[in-house]
Image (cartoon, rainbow, N blue to C red; front, side, top):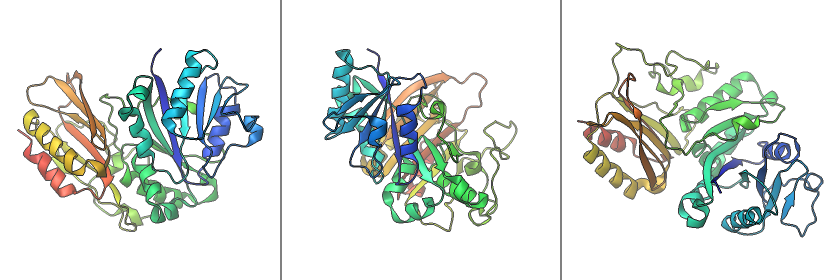
Length: 357
């Protein structure tokens, strides 16, 4: 059987995970999805939705979906679902895992790389995080887990935007972007997130798609964190290469001054090629020392002597690399984004600089 893609759904209490899960478990969307729900979470699915006997652990939905309530280890739940699928007792072609509101999604994500049995059956597609527009700032200030949920995300949705003003949404979006510039951030209100924006995001694939919020890459001409106005989706730098412009080797945007988020991000860019041996040695050392603090990182690299892009991506100490497409007419430029807790940015940026040819 083909590997089954898995989406991790995270978000604090009140962020709207239950609304999304109810949609998955009751709407006739034509997808066969198994939802693994942690029954110890604060936002359990109503029994009316599940229509289940309390002794049942895996329940078939009328729309072809499956709901599995965890009463133990995640690995056990995944393996149990797989065995029932293999025995043709149930059918599903993807999984959504709801983490509890106060959970760090990191260990859940690592399960798909570290457990051999799980890795031969499932493939992690993406971490999707919901942030409550009304209480998001407060949760980020008070709960490190809320920051971890943002740092690990491949896509972020700001929910319940109808309860706050546009400038408040813009300020929260700006804060989230500084913590995680690689995850697209969308604001939604009174409704369910379209499933095609949640599933098949390929956030963990080794591909050369590395989109960084353009505002993050703008020169820090003025401190946006206090200005209160919304920043349009397409700023002066919307990802297109403008030939003839001077490329800045390293760009680092400070976090907004109004918050002290431990989880921060920074970007390294250079149009000079890397020496592959120096880079390999440096990254190996960085991962052995700081791997536990590095949540997500990804790079599309220009390596001397290689006609193809080199892609690296990792979670904590686990890094994968692969050859991407030929550079062709694309501008040869390395671009890396790091997201982590209390990372020594000067050391990392300076070290990468020494690995250039």
